Image (cartoon, rainbow, N blue to C red; front, top):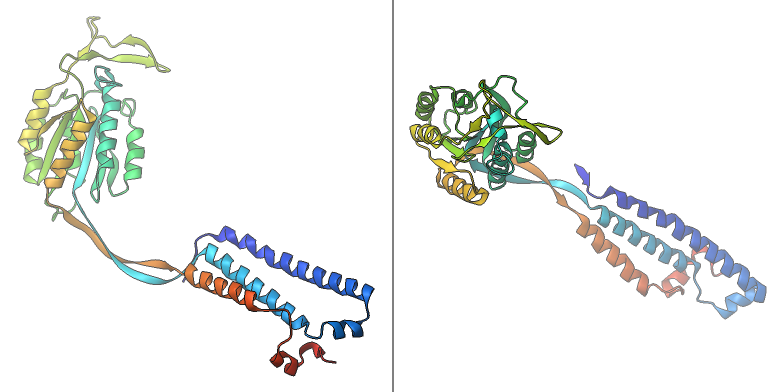
Length: 345
């Protein structure tokens, strides 16, 4: 098979036509000029060793060098090289709270944006691990199945918002239950669920679901996003705060970080609770946890890789250029004997 890496360099082959045209023009001009000063017979006597064939040969050598340089720049790749690729890591599912309480700005820029930043930075530090994303509020919805495509994961991550789910509330248990369907490899010993939330939970079954998940080898790490002091939930229009959410009594709703719930969920599944204030501290701590876990080989396969061939063309180009230096436009003894183009007549 053949693969061309930089095909646009083929435009330089147009130099062949230019060089050929210049050679023809130069030859005709020289011939015409010489005839203006002397006859053909006298010219042969004045320059008996002048060889038209050598001139053509020098042109051919230069053209070949240009062709070789062009192909060296194009860098054709041919042949195959077999390599073994092994990918080892952990399956990690991120469950991100997209309920309205995540709009609170008690942690900058907002709880949801902070959760997105934390997740993106954790993904940036991964090597070989597979990731999946779940969004949840009153119910959980799959966003991205388990994959090694980190770019796709961050793209889905950026699209998360609090309007994507019509039913409001927070059911962490729903997210845990859905995550259990993500881990479809029974041989996978280390399965990680990372929950990013303010901890508000309207489902009392979350701890029980976490215990059931732990029996399947799923470790749950909870990252608390928000403050215990809490903050109001802004209602915005075109990025401008219009008002704050109020309860049925007309009082402004203050949503607070529930460390207790998040800690209990993590403890029930042999995980830990992590404060989500500092992005660096969170990513460092999660990185240490993941590095300590046993890695499983996800895939081991052989693939074909094209090998560069530009060096051969570059070598030939240099050879032809050096050859051109030593080629003189004068007849040699063997050329005289060959009498090409009837030059001796």
